[in-house]
Image 1: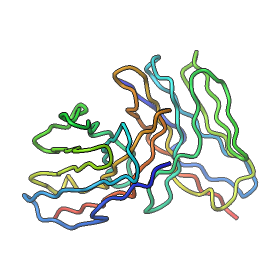
Image 2 (image 1 turned 180 degrees about the vertical axis):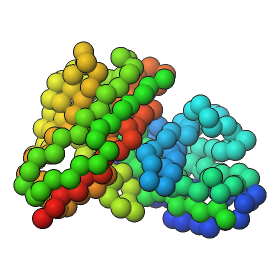
Image 3 (image 1 turned 90 degrees about the horizontal axis):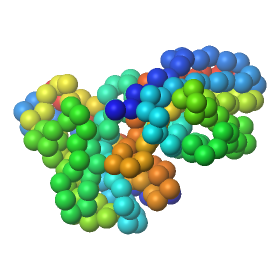
Image 4 (image 1 turned 135 degrees about the horizontal axis):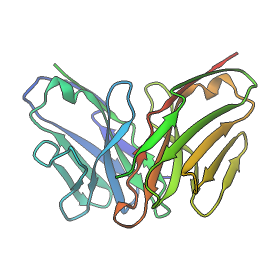
Length: 113
Length: 114
């Protein structure tokens, strides 16, 4: 499995501001994804980060709120824009290897006040 | 889209007992079913998975079974230990344009009492 890191590990932000989360993998991977895990809840897929093209968003998530970049096969960013307290969650990136197995980064714990 | 239901939401067992967690899925195109273990404050860890071309897979004390006809799959943990205490999530993924996208169940909080 790949070694996946995320920055920051946690942050406390004021409503109305934006936060960019970085995800770095130690090897080139085809698939990268972003998930949200609200407190005490399961994981929900936000979008697939596509290298060199726009991300593919799941129902209920839009690019204006969660812009995603993926400039190469080892790095992606997720921005949480115009934050409100409802955005307080853990945000996790994941990478998929060729057989479909998916591994998660350590997550970014976001608190919006 | 895919919908995954997971039961029970909480499970309490004595050390040494077996634990079984069950999931059902809705999309007959789903063909990959992983299970994740998430300890408090940690990332989800892939512990075992099964693909639609097999009915059962074992790895030491854990096993997963799949019934494609009924669209359900289960996680079995034998000889449970206190370190098995965690939240367990099942997930399902289809191929084609949905390849790699995981839909998760609601999670099961497993507590193993010494």
